[in-house]
Image 1 (cartoon, rainbow over the protein chains, first blue to last red):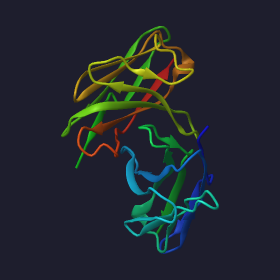
Image 2 (image 1 turned 180 degrees about the vertical axis):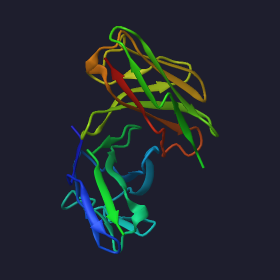
Image 3 (image 1 turned 90 degrees about the vertical axis):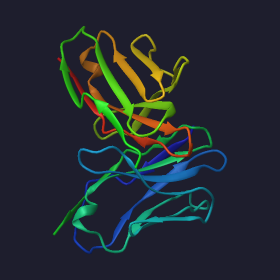
Length: 111
Length: 116
């Protein structure tokens, strides 16, 4: 079945550091890939998505590129801020309405 | 923007009692709502898909008589954990998919259930 594996956390960085959170997936066909973010006390929010190979999703300085050859969708940001502290979830959809999530990675950014 | 609320945010109950959790889409209509369960340091696991006016579709391994879902209107779905036991303690999250813009799910903040 479909599955998502993402980097175990927690991740702690200093402000302005470079961020990478790894995500790989297993799926049949051509899934859509997503990154969701959950800020403390809030629901998950869609951060970015990509629907086909080589697509790059981007939002709020975050980027992720759909790499079919490596079945990966790594999240990156060049310079993190304290306000980026949250839990990040990688997810996929196989075209049905269902989402399959990774375990989540907690990011803490210190000033 | 699209907001989904859940009530209560936290509940503690005794073993054997039933607990109802509400999921509301506040500023949009949703024909489909989803219920997830999240254990500590684990993924969100889809429990069931709730469609307005029809029976919910449960994922494999989820007891439909244990987790009752009602989607009575386009803005409200409820999950009732019947005869709760300590192993039902978890974080329950709902999401709603709007009638317009069906690709996106909007998530509620979650409900923490502790069964003593």
